[in-house]
Image (cartoon, rainbow, N blue to C red; front, side, top):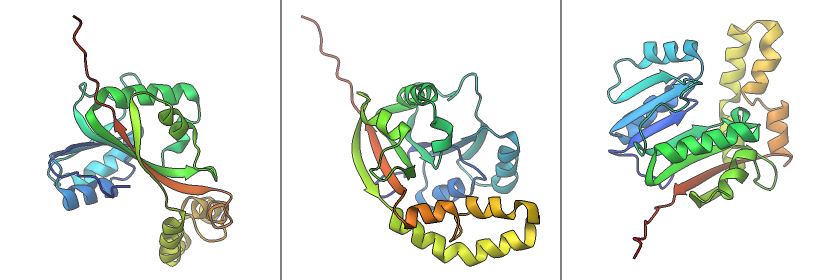
Amino acid sequence: VLANITLTDQNILEVGCGRGAGAAWCVRTYAPHSYVGIDPSQNVINLCEQSYSTTPRLLFMVADPETYLSFQNESMNVVLSIETTNLFDEIVAVKQFVDEITRVLTPNGCFLWCGLCNIDGSNVLVDYLTTNNAFIIQEKVNITTNVLHALDIQSNSRAGFIDSYVQAADQEYCGLLAGLPGTQLYDNMQQERAEYWRVVFRKKITINTPLI
């Protein structure tokens, strides 16, 4: 999802940062000016802070449901959101989210998203952004083959971790979350019932025409 995007010296916001490993990797690899990861779970943010407290230019925050994205207008060059489709099933939530990323992104800033879509590449969030006048689609790529390849590479280590550390009653659910071969998530992509896409949306530059 970061292909062809400049992150160096930029202000980055990741919505739904999870355990923070991706955020830490981005900071080490691309040296942004700042990187903020937010997540609705206090426990998750506590884990991020414990794991990456010494990483410079990296900050983690709990997403405030009242203020939503509590950042200044046009303060972020890039907003990144990985596999957050489940947060935006309702159109009201989609509209609120899009309004907020529009507000915090700089003119010509990018919203980077990837996740599961229908077989035509459609998705509630993607569809709404596609018709939104504030953004243009710079790039939209089906990466299902890449994702399946990555899941195949990681399947043995993930299955071993689940067998060793997860209680038997929870192993099936964790296997689904991990996308192990044979699970519904994996099979839906392999059998072309679902697709995995990455999309780059660029915020339009608004030009104010003076009144004569």
